[in-house]
Length: 108
Image 1 (cartoon, rainbow, N blue to C red):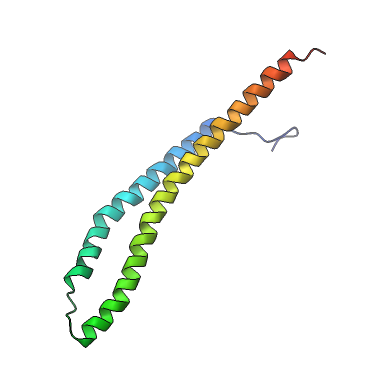
Image 2 (image 1 turned 135 degrees about the vertical axis):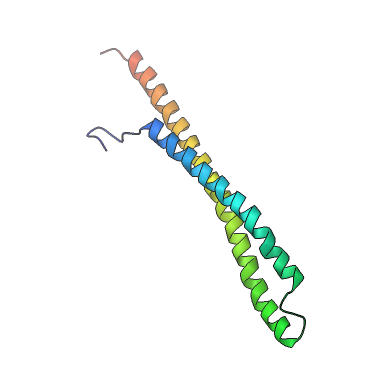
């Protein structure tokens, strides 16, 4: 923060947003690649359909569904966050430009 306000480095913020977006995309790709086998394992029921298998399946399903949902949501929210950063930078730059133009019209 400077003496007269907050200093924003738009280039650095946009670069960080790009990296964050790439991270979200990477999370999404990993979820798609690794999540499919996890889902398939639950459907194949390799633990069997006897009493012990059903007990394991009920516990496995809850955790697997939570994992897959959170993984998907993390990717989605990371991408949304990166988009929010871009919007904030663009908005801030617009406000700065408008205020500079308004101040330039003021005669002293």
